[in-house]
Picture 1 (cartoon, rainbow, N blue to C red):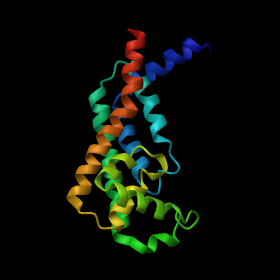
Picture 2: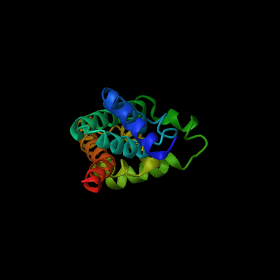
Picture 3: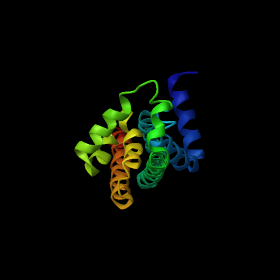
Length: 173
């Protein structure tokens, strides 16, 4: 099978299964923002690939952004809740037990940047799920956290979907 046949088969599959794009992006966004799963799933890179395929298959941009944003936002909420619920007990559990500097570094980052730290932390891979967790640990007011998380999730989703979605359209004309 030659390369063009593989590309054609892939695009046909994506066109015939467009409904799964948003579901997949939602769960990837959720997993990327959740403290437990984020370390195992390279969702940011997968976002880029899915956007390129979806663009080439004639898909729409905004539903992808909405799905990725919703997943990332709910993952942040879950991480915040875990931090709020378990506070100091977290130090004795994975991934903090094996990397004792992770929580103090995230705390220092969070204290320095506050609400803006939620937004900035979304773009620092290892900090992405840890910053919302620390927000919960320090009992950041829910409304402030929610607004910062919603904004950062939206911006993150756009940043990791637009380049390949629109870049491919500009390349192909």
